[in-house]
Amino acid sequence: MSDTGWISNVLTAARPQAVAALLRYFRDLDTAEEAYQEACLRALKAWPSNGPPRDAASWLIMVGKNSAIDHVRRQRRLQPLPPDELISDLSDAEAELADRVDEADYRDDILRLLFVCCHPELPATQQIALALRIVSGLSVRQIANAFLVSEAAMEQRITRAKARIAAGQVPFEVPGPIERSERLGVVAAMVYLVFNEGYTTNVAEKGVRAPLCEEAIRLSRLLLRLFPTEPEIMALTALLLLQHARADARFDADGMVVLLEEQDRSRWNRKLIAEGLALVEKALRHHRPGPYQVQAAIAALHARAPRFADTDWNEIELLYGTLERMQPSPVVTLNRAVAVSMSRGPEAALTMIEPLAQKLNGYFYFHGARGAFLKKLGRAEEARVAFDRAIALANTPAEADHIRRQIDRLSAGSEPQSATMSGARP
Amino acid sequence: MQYAILCYHDEKVTCAWSKEQDDAVMARLGGVMDKLSRQGKLGPVARLLPTTAATTLRKDREQPIVIDGPFAETKEQLLGFYIVDCQSLDEVLDIARELGAANPGGAYEIRPVGVFIPGKTAA
Image (cartoon, rainbow over all chains, first blue to last red; front, side):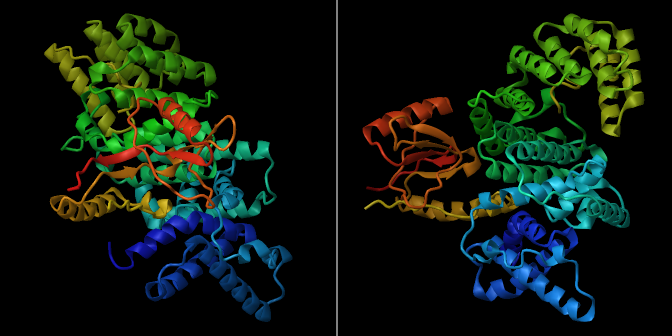
């Protein structure tokens, strides 16, 4: 780590809390961000010689606030008075406290900052981009790289998204318990989107999107520190940790996707798994089940199996059944069918998915899984038709390549256990 | 005399380390620990999982209560610790309750151990 490396680490860690407090204060996203930037510049000047303050976030909030107020005052001499709400709460005594302020005191601030990014009129990709820019503090270039678009295009997207937010109503009042829990649900879904955006990758992009997964984990941990007793937030964090633990094993030396059943489990990150399992256990003790807990419990069963053959498919089938009742969807049923193919055999699985054919006809995983079931049953010709359909629908070259390998095995006549196209995500 | 060296840092910072940064820190610490180990001065070393994985048992009332999250009271001081090997969090909590019955008051913070090096002192 370079000499100033520690400063940038501290600044990054303090960012959500600082920007969130400044947003409450100035009630304007751009002003809050500028104030934070200004505070960071001063930190880079002051901290190397003075050492870091005891509470970096409080320092940044205070300095950011003062510098922005200076700025507003200077502007005021040149321009007519700014609207009152821009400089409201100037005498907010709480923020003057330089003592360590418990993060929980900023809970609603940080939740608001995240919630603002989840504006319902913004498409999912814009919500993600905005959260990465504003909350995580990634540069526009980093975000553009992760989304595989030009920097200019991403800049424009973020500017548009911010304008939308500025035009809308940002809820500044302290939320009641029901509103708070609704906001938490919306924000949790956004964090999961950030993770999936990083997880859904293919050969050409290998590694490029991994920072998105890491940011999602960081955001999820942030939520968990703010809401330490919410089992669904424990489970969301666990789910992300358990899935991310497999990151290194998901690609082979040539950058090709390696499916769960073929992964070298010694390359799974045991530290992340240990943390994920501890969180799943904590969450389940609450006996307040929810969809993230069910998904995390499924991920935990995979993480606990020393070998693919040791996987507890009966339990996974039951858990998918539970998820189906909580969030009925043909995709969940398809996942349950994959578990069924392992626990009760491909015949039962095939029967289960036939009714889904119409709804999932345009879905890559449906045809991939169907092909795998047919192949296991020795119905090679039908399998080939299903696989061809899957290739036509593949979202990435890696997906198509995987199916082609299945077809090659059909021709070779070998029959390895292979039916996990969709259930256990590779 | 044996001493315990307790490690404090801002978790928001350490959890944000990249894997490379984390590995580099652990490698540097490993160098120091190797030396201490050769000198017979290194006892058990534990790296705890983040406080988000913590559970707290408050034992200052008739029926101890289990709280999610780390122990946060600053008016009480760290007096010691146990390392126990258990199959589940429930089992740890049972042990903590039993210890709490023997010594009521205060709280136990229960933190999963991420890295454990048994070590061996010369004494």
